[in-house]
Length: 364
Image 1: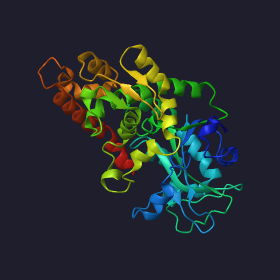
Image 2: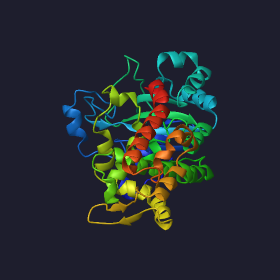
Image 3: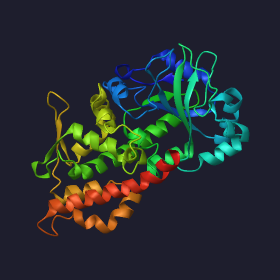
């Protein structure tokens, strides 16, 4: 695996990716890394030392204190065949029952929910020694080991989620900065995924986020301008709508803030959405003004044409479930168009929650 991550994004060194490459069988046609193990969160250590909720992002061991766990997603064309090979190479990555039942059973389980099968808290080193989180007899990782959580998804399910927001489980992760990993098999597939990401997922995300802005207390619709960081917070929050981990207190309540405001993240978000913002500026939908920080967008949500254009760029399934409320976007209906836009944003948020919640419950 050769990393495509840009120099200023590196929280991982090349040797980390080389270690990952040597630890898994062939057949991975697209892969990316994400999360605080890749893009460090500036107050992560402070949070993990004071929080009463145990998270999986930082694992403490006597040999490796505060070692971040790298989150990975692997796309494979043949799920059962890949698990069969991985069971031979890394049987200790799997819990006892799936290891005993075999690749057909694992593939069946994987298709439930978001179509992604995770092996968490795996430790790899030069000898590819791993452990399953469910195994009480797992050995502690050595000082040279790397902790991983990796999910395996079929190529078809990945593409479908990017195009149609089936569950927002993987597409939601890709709405935030990721480190794309170029595998030996990827080639044109990486280009295809990148194109689907731009054509559908990122376009959906920024248009959805702008329509959700009225729910943010810091946003004043009538001012017709919004800090870019608030737009990115709105984007980062899309895949957490309806996520039971947040409501149950199993996720850091400051997660969305950290995803945007940790060191370097604002720049990464801006780079990720640069093409989308360029297209929206060319169409006259927004204008962008840069200041000493990240800048702000000028956006007229009072305008009916602006609202309709944003709505037109939502995913088809979201449009379908909000169609009966879309008249709220027509400011000519009455004189209280701001309240109507807030009402639509609430409906939109609920709709996103209904997409996210089912798979999130199963995967949790």
